[in-house]
Length: 435
Ligand SMILES: Cc1cc2nc3c(=O)[nH]c(=O)nc-3n(C[C@H](O)[C@H](O)[C@H](O)COP(=O)(O)OP(=O)(O)OC[C@H]3O[C@@H](n4cnc5c(N)ncnc54)[C@H](O)[C@@H]3O)c2cc1C
Image (cartoon, rainbow, N blue to C red):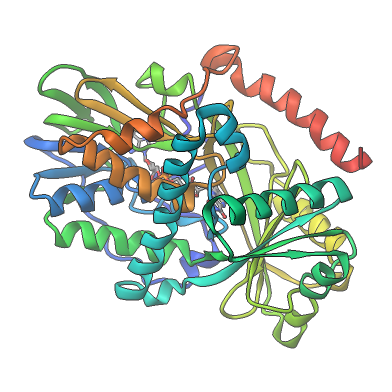
């Protein structure tokens, strides 16, 4: 089976996305050569690994980050940019599963996740343009009712009053498709330019003293105290190791791979729409909908529609991403018929069986954080911060997140993808049939 690091990718190359076209990519950092001894070695330079690196280095620890490709190469540099509220499970359900106190602690963490991004954008990365407002749109009356019930629960339980409930007419005035029957507008959530944000996290981590090596694929971890992390050209002896490779991490630690399914998602950026942008979205918000094969989209700063969806559950990227996404986009917005598409790209995220993050202690000195299941823009940075706290000796919040860990995928690493593809095709068919 091809490594998830290279299955759809060329070494060290970020995809030709609208994001890459709108940043100044820094020069490549060198690979790791020779031996190093550090306090913490982090595998993966996305939101999770770089947030951990920044917090650990700020605490005075000696930190090395290794990425097989480049900073921001993974999902962090190519996602939909939606900074979502909460987890991929309603707070009501979390309270039923884990009790009210734990649910409240999880809610506080998820709020902190968004606050951190908003603050870092304001102070260090204004060009990541944190913009408030995410609409969640329901395609059926039952889905709309669920959104409204969950919004009322958040208000009643946590005093979260940033959500407006929308009926069909209000939703269609905001998001101009007849497909939606209502939903919510959450002004506590938002959207960012994710590549600018992740590049800035790397700068902040380096400014605090962390060292980052690119094109440094880790192919083996020798557990022990210290652990030894090996790449082709070098080795790092570390008192602690953090695994932050998410959907791209090859099967080098079976306890992690068993819990994480790599899933591909794709985005198309139209040509700039100019005044026509207002025929799609009345405000500068992001949208995601309740379809099982969900659509997520928003406008870019130059008024392109960045339209995301998941047309494929195979591990390899399909060849016709542009055609499939264009068809889905026009199905939602017939007014875009004939509009040019300037960029398409795909990426791999990690999902879990229970759609909650999988935060694990693999060994006394090795922790892992992944499987954010589509809520990683907000939750991954927070997870990095909480893993840093655990390494510094305060494991309370780590344990709160670690309790979310779900079961392993049936079928093991070899068969989890075909089994999921089968299940997903069934649900996608239900979407198309509207049942
Ligand atoms: C197309 C797309 C759209 C998305 N949209 C949203 C959204 O709108 N909102 C949201 O909340 N979430 C979204 N997500 C998910 C979100 O982007 C991820 O949850 C988040 O970025 C995960 O960050 P990470 O740092 O854990 O992993 P990544 O950003 O994937 O980084 C992992 C890094 O680890 C490196 N790595 C892996 N294995 C090794 C190894 N053995 N040696 C060295 N390096 C290694 C990889 O090269 C990679 O750079 C989306 C994902 C995709 C793909």
